[in-house]
Image (cartoon, rainbow, N blue to C red; front, side, top):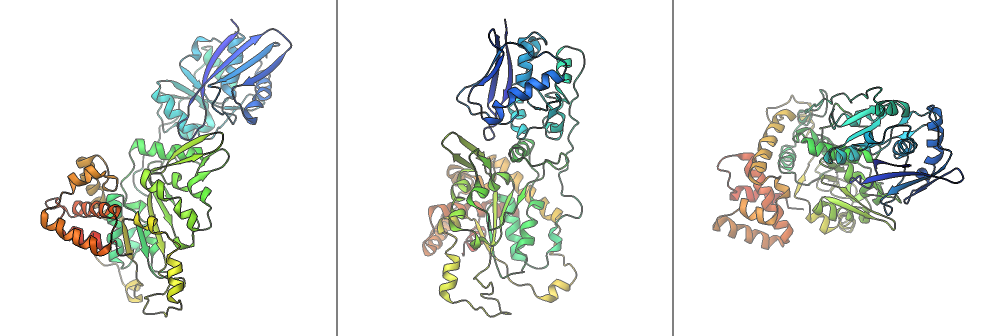
Length: 500
């Protein structure tokens, strides 16, 4: 029978659906056709594969070759199917054994010499293949990403000839080296001890890290807002293996280089305020992840928040609630994860010196109102903490570090302890608590409930604001330890962060 089947995987968001490569040899004039909704790069595979097979000293069939990529309705692009197609042709022509193709998947682009080249977005395919219990043969150039999966599931190859020799039982393929886990930031990285003063902002940053809450910092230029934001990732708990793989899978789709020695460090993304909506949330004719997805399980820092176009900021509203972004195009729809922690910074007015005793503000009330109106109310309603970052006296900057200026390791220990309490109690961070779990874990006595209701009535707070205040209060209680109950002092501090 002149029919062979190999397995590969397409690139569709982070799902990496399986593709069955069917190759049939029949009589007729010699030709090669590829069907199954292939895009240009896949259609061109017939020439790459033919020359690569001939360069590897195999015989390309002098017959009619039909390659079907199933399922037919799934768009296929890129050179990731070259290796699977080449092996299918060789197996259909009885040049390699078919039986060894059954429990393996093959990914790789072929050079005309038969060498294997790296393909982007390979990590999601490796994750899905491991769940299916199959081994995957990938180019050696993808070894850094393959090392994150595990030794038993991935095999590395340099060329088509090496893969064919392995299938014939005439050689062995290498396994990727074991990845190294470093849980802490490298020495010399951003540390909380570098920040002088700003005790209220440091407190808000610690609460944000402990509960996974979104944070907005408001203050004049040069007061340390960016320094504070850059140090948030250093006090967050390390990612679990599943979280790190999800984060690396998104970065793999974007073509970024993954450092195998620091793959569990939480990402920190800081796009410029000129970034478009597509750059921020993702898009394109072939959907690619944006900054919010590249910050998955990490921090997204938006400096000069009102300088972003308003329509660009408003696209963040749904991902902040759902933790994912769905990009729809005429030909396909892709879903990317976007569970990020938003940290934003802004000036109090266009000139930046409103309320600053050292500089006179030159802005009119109308200018200040228009400036602040660039950030919509619904977006601000999704921010849990708003803190003022005032100017620090020069004497505090030149003085030696005080006992209150703790380093990141000390703060991180408290954050990790508070996170562990939340995970033991509800299996998730406090910022992710559902309404049902929130009422259970933040049950208030009658006096505290009446006090909170009166305060929220005066503020005109929404139902979303009420739930977010409870979540922040729950985090503050976890940080302080004690009885673990949410008290009025915790509610008062949480309300204090809703002033904006």
